[in-house]
Length: 239
Image 1 (spheres, helix red, strand yellow):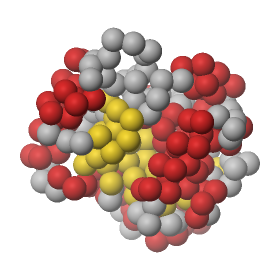
Image 2: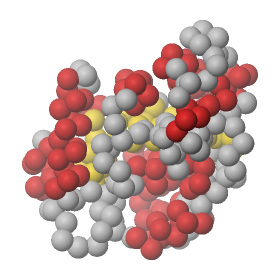
Image 3: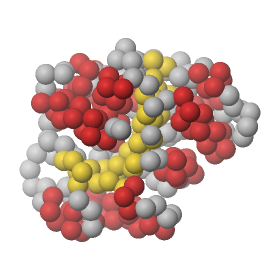
Image 4: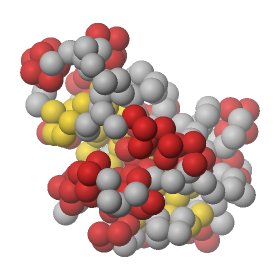
C-alpha cells in the first residue's frame, strides 16, 4: 500500500507527518519505506538526522526497464528505527536528469518489495507529483486552518477530480501549525466537501525540536501524547 502526503502549500507539515507515520508503520508491520519526492529541497534525511550518501540522483541514468532492485538498493538508507528511506537530492540541479519513467519503474519495484510506501510529495502537480499520486492507494491532503491553505486545498481537490481520482482515495488531514485563531474544522470540511480523517493537535515545541535535532517524536519521544496519536493514526491507515 502506498500512502502519499500532498499539499499545494508549503509549511503544512507533510514531511513531519510522513517521517513519523513511516516510523510508526515500520514499528507495527516492518517492511516500510519512506520516499522523499520533494526533489527541489527534500527534508526527510534532515528530519531523520541521517547523512546524505546516496539520493534519487544516483539512479537518474536508468531508463524504463533498465532499473532493477539491486540498483535501487544502492540508494536506500536505513534509519535506526527500522525505517528504510530514499532521500531527495540536496540541490534541485541534481534531480534535473531524473526521468519520469525511472521514478515510475522505482515505485513499481518498491511496491513488490515493501508492505508500505510512504511518500512525501512536492507542493505542486509536477510530473513527479502526478506519478506518485497516480501510484498511491491513499492520498492525505494536508491543510492548516487558514484561508490560504483552504484555498490551496480546494485547488488540489479540483485537480484530483480532473485527474480522475476516486473521492475515497482522497483524505483530508488538518494540521494546525499555529496555536489560536484558526478556522473551525467544520467550516473547512464544508468548504472542501470532505470530513477530516484526523486533526493533529498543536504541539509546536515538540515538532520544532524534532526537526532541529532530527529526532522524530514517535521514536525519540514516545511518551508524548502526540506520539501516541500518530501511532494510532498509523494503525488506522494500515491494513
